[in-house]
Image 1 (cartoon, helix red, strand yellow):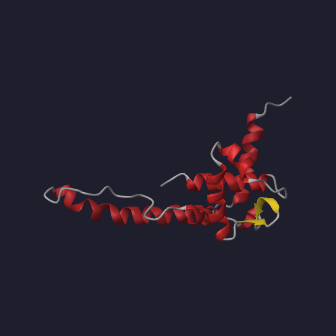
Image 2 (spheres, rainbow, N blue to C red):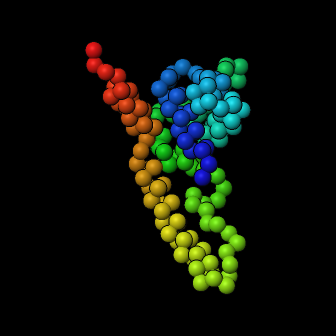
Length: 144
């Protein structure tokens, strides 16, 4: 799995915490410490599935729906790479007892694991992540 999921969550959290302000890809890239082109590519995928939007002539992105309606499962689906979450190494020796069976052993296991991950992600909204982010702020800020 690539970092597209974590970068997508990062982008959406920035947009949700700064809503209703629009945020440019350059500003988001500064937070992620990456190139704005990478951010625009990620945001393009999120826009395609209706999680973010932008308007012609107006710079910046914004959430296309309330954070309470966006789940981590939706973000995961938009950001995941082609192929399984847990890829299996290839080119095993067919003359080895383990090499011969490893695909069959791991394929079903990994399929169930990915289904559980998606079920778990479906139970968490972007709003939940916002709340957790703000709570972390409160814990790290000493009382005066």
